[in-house]
Amino acid sequence: MPKLYTSSIPFKHGMLPVSDGHWLYYEQSGNPNGIPVLFIHGGPGAGLSDDYTRMFDTSIYHIIAYEQRGCGRSTPFASLAHNTTAHLLADITILREHLQIPKWIIFGGSWGATLGLLAAINEPQTVKGLILRGVFLGRQQDIEWYICPHGGAAQMYPEHYETFVQDIPPLTEASDICDAFFELFNQKNKFYKANALRSWYGWEDRISRIQHPYGDPLYNYNLHQIASLAMLECHYLKHHCFIEENFILENVYKIAHIPGYIVHGRYDMICKIESSYTLQLLWPNSQLTIVPDAGHSTSEPSIAFSLKMATDTMAKLFNN
Picture (cartoon, helix red, strand yellow):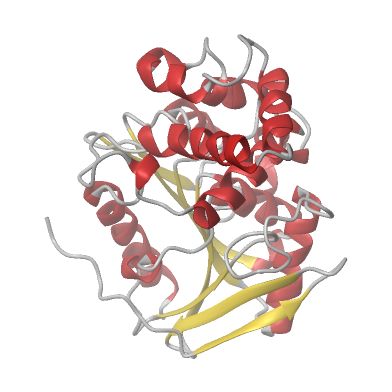
């Protein structure tokens, strides 16, 4: 398989005040005069990986990336206060206006795809194109697929699901599961709290790819890396991602004119492939690539390469 691009070192980074005491870490890489592209990470709460720029030709793209409220280098860390989807969408607008970019491409995976779609629906006049991976639509069925015992992920990985829920009562409703974990995350006993955070994080990471070349992910990350994803993800799922049921699909007509590329692994157990398929059917200006030998994560080479192909194709569209 052809290689990805070489990782790029940011030419500029900083902290941007947004609202309610939150500050966002952001950075810029690639060509300052190139095609602006906003990279939106997943989670909620995941932060930026070290190699996210490898899917972009840095001679063509002006890559803008940031860490959402409460995660990564943004402050206050792991804060749930004033942390809703509406706040995150407002932050995207603040960042774009701060950098004086009238229009950009949005690139997002998983929860980043959710935010990217919502941002485009909210301000379609500011979006040139969309590149999405492992689409999560935030519907009740999407949440149940991921964390409920009757969901697709639990049915495919029953032994990992048992480990995931071992410290909470037997529950079937997504809201009850989130409430039970939320209680564990906020208890005074630091040992039990840490175990709960690892259980949530470990569930996601164990099912995120078909193979784990580095062993059990539960023991390969420190608690700081785990805490923001577990707490923020539970917070958002507990509140139905702060969006109305089926909001994205009912409003996708607002971005019908925007070109989009969607990449989804056939065996994605976190975000079911039906989401991307249904989205593409309602979005005639989009193209769906189903990757036959991959799950959810961009750490899987075929997912990353498919995204690289999408950025290259989008660059040809706008690099006139």
